[in-house]
Image (tube, rainbow, N blue to C red; front, side):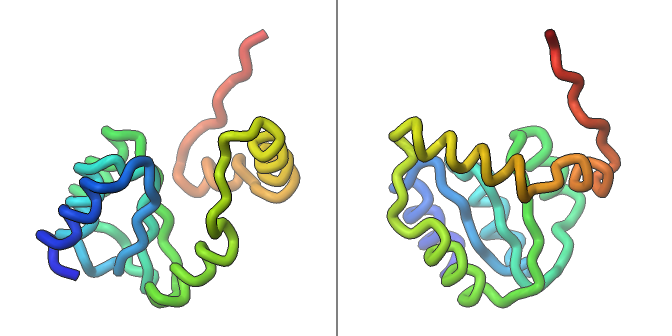
Length: 120
């Protein structure tokens, strides 16, 4: 997909995760300038500093995976499919799964960040 086609697609969607190749900097930048909530880069290629900086400014997480784009999209689709999060029970379930299986402190440590301090 070229950047113009991607922009047209991105403008039709809201609150999306964008999966694209780590070498597709123009698509990454277009995604960051839309309503993207998460950028997933395939091929285990690190994003350039200006992409990291822009994502940080916009508070959009970037995930880098070692799989190809098609495999990554298939995994995301199998995992989330047509799940809608409008029901509170689904949100509670996801929070529970994240609390049990996602090492946020490890992620923050890898990013060189400190965990947020919980307020009373």
